[in-house]
Image (tube, rainbow, N blue to C red; front, side):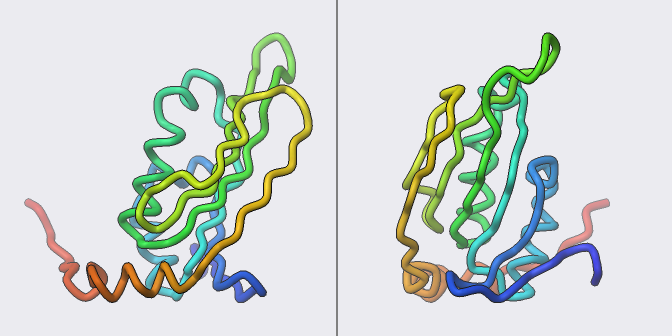
Length: 138
């Protein structure tokens, strides 16, 4: 369908999303079903929602889809009413945070190597995509 986009790249097959999408796990399932190995999540979470949900949602999407998650995040004060949380993250398919850029209000570049073999290894050892069933709850 046209609501999910995957793209081949030198670092693997990318699943494209935005930060609000994190609240809809079925979208990430569709990205994974289309072959995504790395989920991209650019963000401008506010400080309150970032502190409460950012790390948890990113780790959950990585674990349940057995993908790397790369989440570039704005940080700092934008105006009197808006402050972004920051904490650009890279999470591996097991849910381990590999990089956390923190919430500093300054430019920062972080680098992280991705081993796509880890995606395949985890999916082979725990084949949740094959075990998943669609169920209608009534």
